[in-house]
Image 1 (tube, rainbow, N blue to C red):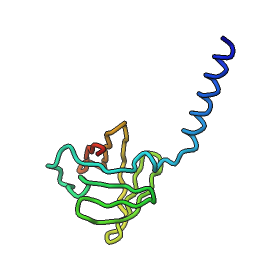
Image 2: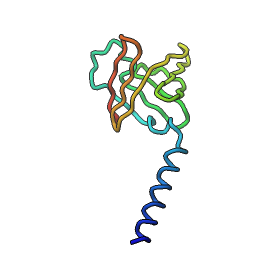
Image 3: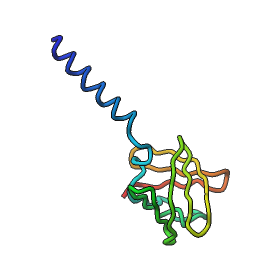
Image 4: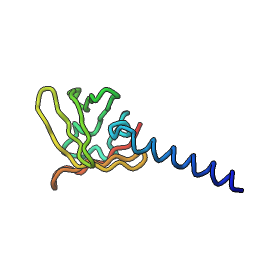
Length: 108
């Protein structure tokens, strides 16, 4: 019984260490599509984040991204930086900014 408990504790410790050391940008990597295409910010309805810190939006605009806590910085190559709050829960990504941006995307 003690050996089983010790093995379980070791596995839990390893999982926690890996979770703490992982790059926060990794969770958002992949393609995301809007659930509601009536949004006024339709360019954000298709977003693809790559593993090199780059992204492409629904209009084909490219740039780089950085995550700081619950803040997503999208640095568009042609338009400069836009900052959004975001929440990532499983396959659901919610992007908000003030009262006019509230976009829910699903992982593809």
